[in-house]
Image 1 (cartoon, rainbow, N blue to C red):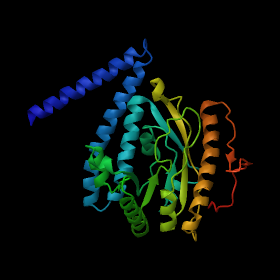
Image 2: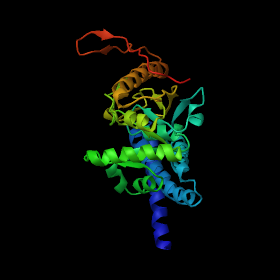
Image 3: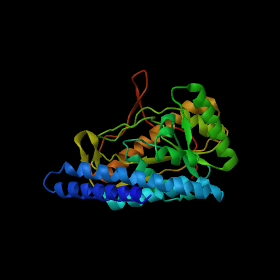
Image 4: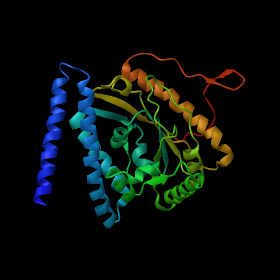
Length: 304
């Protein structure tokens, strides 16, 4: 046991020294900052996952396992702010993160740094959905399993449907919210944009008859641009929009609800990015199959 702790101590000391060396090197070679912050982010995720496993066990024993993901999210937030200088400023003027429960939270998905965004804004009594392969990932997968994450096998549509039904039951019976990325994958976009939305989150919200709460993060390629090996410190704005009611909606309304939510989020994404970068971007225009441009407004119900 002593030998194991000794090896762990050597590893931590060496890893820390490597990060500090890369930060120092970045004064002469700017790209070294990418390596330094990437290494720091990885170890912060490992530490947070280990903490999450322990926290999940303790919280499950006292009947509070629904708080596990919130607890580890906050741990990751503080570790990242300390080690990388990156954080997300959450704008929630009406307090929806504390007041709206249960709900299906949906957000735009840019890079792996969105894990930190969740760390900064993740509400209590909420869980994430994740692809089934993550369940086998050491530390992170263990934590997600213990904390009640919903795993979806994207290669098996039957399993995915079952997972959605299970999520709807969890939402209704335990007042458990979920957070989903309707784009389905990371966009790695340089400018503010959204990929087409998948409909799973909207089917789920209608099935559970709970509101959709959009969460929009400014495009942050000025902070993290993986293709250019750029990773800078900075504060990234993130805004929680008003919930969209699904009361009385049915499966026939999914397409309209999906498009309305996407239009709303894209408009806010451009506004937040302009705020973050202090530059203007073109307003979004939605084109229909007949080639006619149409304004993005619609008449879905938004609950104040």
